[in-house]
Length: 540
Image (cartoon, rainbow, N blue to C red; front, side, top):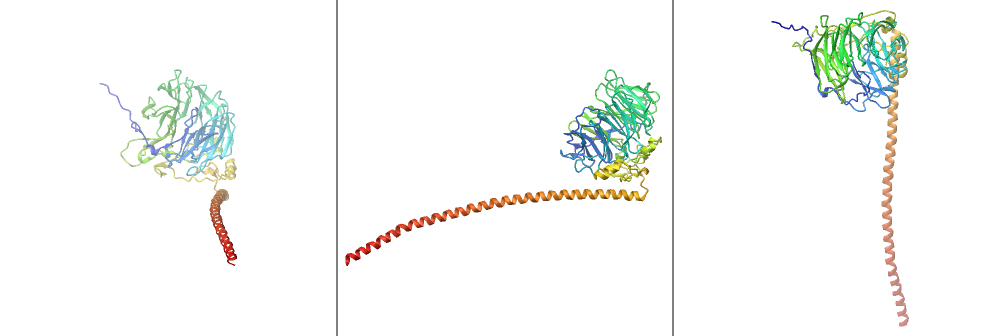
């Protein structure tokens, strides 16, 4: 007698549920670009989606409470001269987002709290180096203001966004870079390339440590580092069948697992949850989301379930754990873009009867504070990302949970482009510094007072500009009112003149008639008088 032992896992019964249409985002013109990107980025404050835009590239930024049908004239972030290909929120500042475009420029934007009230065209900083379109932007997981960009010129550049300078330049790729990912502490970098190879680099020196054949198919491949150091990849085989693999960094040529999934032709995006070791596979053009659990025991990658929808997906974004609702045991939240303009919100939930905080489902998760500065990182220091407990440091925001840390922006001691840009433009915001991070270097009271003075001056300028514009609008409307009143008065005057002329005409006619009637009477009286005179002479 044989029997099958069911694997024990607290995520075996995870299920997905889509929210009602009125709780989703509708009427969004999702980008029709053929570039293999998710077109969507999410954090606990905002939802960003790359959209179609005439005369250049743009993306829309929506606060999470702005659900329902989005107005066609909603403000956009639209400073690019070409279509936007990729966007990424800064993990250490929920108001900062980076975008790469076909115009070869990477722009970093500061989004005000509450969202945009008018179209934003002035970035905080422009990062100009690439000679061809930039299709990949990626933030460092633990270092502040460190951004990786990759373009179709086969160049990979790591920037210090706080100063606008290049830290590392990697030019050893023979073809277009499809994907890149830092490991847990940011000390290693894995990339996949159009030449079908996977490579591991030292991101500080740009030195190539190892390379191997990734997937034999010619279509795009993806690779991500897992928390415990392994590498998960997706791609195609020679028969164009989609497959995934699990590899060790020191043995890239020998995959631990290589599994074929199906024969669909859409590129698969692996979305990884480091807290639960769950991997969600979302294919472009698919109508399903498959999710797997990675464990130390064979077969290492365990299939859990599939979430199915009737519509194919054009893009997808994964909410960080800080934005999930722990009261309903929600372990993941997806924002799924459909071809019909609907951004569908999908919640992944573990069924639990208790309403208490489930500590086994929510270990310490990533915080919004950076662990080290860009200068410390490039100098050789490594640090794991800072974590915090959702049980101790949470505040309820529209059904989700975000860290209650201080998120005020402050000017760093070190002079950098972001400070100058924000002070001179008056609307871009401050430097890209994390909320409570000690590298902000604001312990000096003089610097704090100076930063406060800068921001107060900026706010004062903004208020004066608004007052000036309102006054101009009022003057314009007053002039228009006067012109309309003059037209009305002129029309009323013409009507009065017409009436007077009519009265004068009728009076003249009456006078003429009376004079004509009096003339015969006068002639008759004259005749009578002459007749009387003749009769008198005859009598004499």
